[in-house]
Image 1: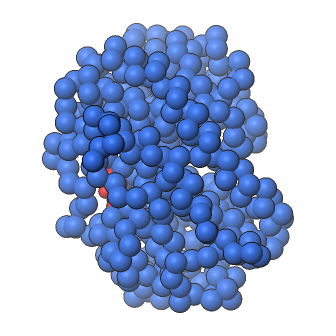
Image 2 (image 1 turned 45 degrees about the vertical axis):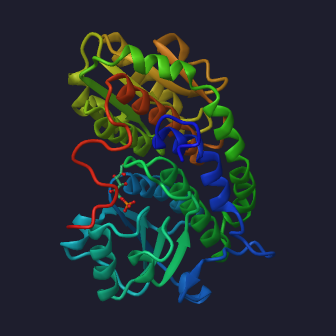
Length: 369
Ligand code: F6R
């Protein structure tokens, strides 16, 4: 049942090209329109949306953060991302022109379900991005976009995360086309690039030998930091979460720009830091800013493990390790950059002799508030 892999998590990490490919499959009709799995929302409803609020928990919330960067860029609709349990118990400013998008692998997370109900009571339109057919959250939503990651057995989410990001790109590209505007044309070419991502993920999975070795050497590490910027910021957060869950190591992810506002004080000799470097094509010179961050922490003794695109040579002088990912346009990079972090957590957990698929204190689906 584990298809020759030692753990479900390893199997699911290796299924990620399919999770992304299958989530894209049959998504658009002949005219390039998005096919929702179930919808009570008309195109007019979707055209009138003036705000999107994404609600989710844990890994799904990091997928939501990635979605924010992409959807705002393509559609110019303001997008907020909020943890479902925080959203539920405040007075959010939403109405029938708000599209509340929930993201949930299981479709049964109670915190997320309660937030969806709250949104409906307030009159919002609700759309569920979910991996489990017929589960409660999609049943209680106005529209559904199923991710096709297949069943995820390991407690720690991997392939569902990539599928969630993929589905939210598709939603963003659809809204961009529906509403016209500057990015409607770009939407077509991004969709094409998205179709090519499974092959890049496959290629990347074949390069993970060094990551596995690094993880083995680090079995005694007590703390690991993860830095990212732009869409690499949620990827850094996800890398830290995977490590906490699987290896019970103190791990923290933060936005690279925050470094000088406090966290740089944590850096001392030998502190391992993963840096998710933005693609050199990222707007506003963000790549150079992150390269400076790597230089700063290295000067203070950090051990820098850098995740950078093929061909990005600027990082090399400041990196103790460079983990290469295939090139992609900046907004799609999370589908690649998170993979080495998943593999790292998996092998560190294994090196510590821990139960990868069933980490202590955790359940696959959290059905209590
Ligand atoms: C992390 C993880 C959790 C879930 C979260 C939401 O590896 O599995 O953080 O992502 O509990 O679960 P779903 O997506 O089922 O709502």
